[in-house]
Length: 427
RNA sequence: GGAGGGGUUCCCGAGUGGCUAAAGGGAUCAGACUGUAAAUCUGACGCGCGAGCUUCGGUGGUUCGAAUCCACCCCCCUCCA
Image (tube, rainbow, N blue to C red):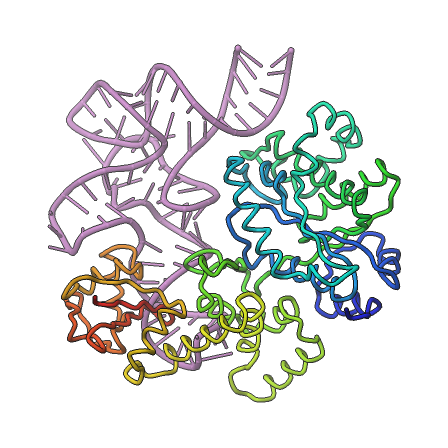
């Protein structure tokens, strides 16, 4: 493992990855010169992690690369409760079976990003259900709850709007979340000698709760470090596309869609994202920015970013597929593609609809493929010239797609808008 | 348990009997311009080719006509006990 513990914080600094730190000077020196154990938690709120989880997850890896031991915590217990931090409304509880299933999926995903076989600082995946499942309510209230002052808890910024805003509110269940997460930190300190918790900056309140609890229960000094929440320069929410969340699971977001997401990053964000989401040295990223600026041409950075992150998440094959399909659809001429190229498009993750018919109305096809949500909208798309079929734009709503419109007597690529494609196969 | 306030189309939020598929803003989508960027401009934004149909927490009523009035129910918030 790389032995650069003194450079770790400098690197994090240069990347803009440090939002807040507790006892900053002590924390820095604590992690310099000796191997430490830290943790980051991931609650199962869905059956996959998404790109929002990438920053803390990669941060764990950054610490591991610097020689420290990362613990990735899956919130089998906290996922049953729901973190209220900065959420404007109470959340729906999921059943134990469902959350249990998600825990396993997340565990498998987390394992992909950390090294579990590197000796003394091998990563460990832990589940907080392990130490809360058999904890009785009375013991919890007496041994843990006693250390918390409600007066202090309601001061936390993370729950303030739920407490103060008219029309909002918070259940005791969610209000208790902070205590559970704090208990995790104390427990990991006891079990693994863990001395640092990292998380998004929305986790600050929960993390400091754990720092206090660890001191009270075990007289241990532990630290907290938060990472910035990823924002976009135009103020829009990061990590969403028209079709929803960008997931890490390739079955939920194909490598192609994933790659495309990063490729369309705004110039104003791309260099920052390179620092957040890749392991490319900050100095190299700055060089790239200079070069892009000097070139006066379209920047290279988006391609570097998309390639790096897609490789990280979907591996070499995923990147290759994503690039192949992107260049076919965006820069290639469809009529240049061979029959096997079309099959490859499908293999690479382009959305496909198989059609067992001789023909289909264009409007019907748009709705069927999900490119339009209703006939009315589909018509609008066609009328406004937003749709093309195998590159042809001379379309009317009454158009009927037949095999004679297809390539190799089977394939029809429908494009809606600037970057949404769908392959129809006549079978 | 008592008193009061509230639940409107993805979100916020107007609307208190017909002129309301429902103001305004945001988000989103499309087109133009571009670089699969940003900004800007234009348009769309319940469903339907259309006549029209279905929506305003739920159910039932009053009325020629209800998101708007009445009854009951469900949920949320505030204060009091």
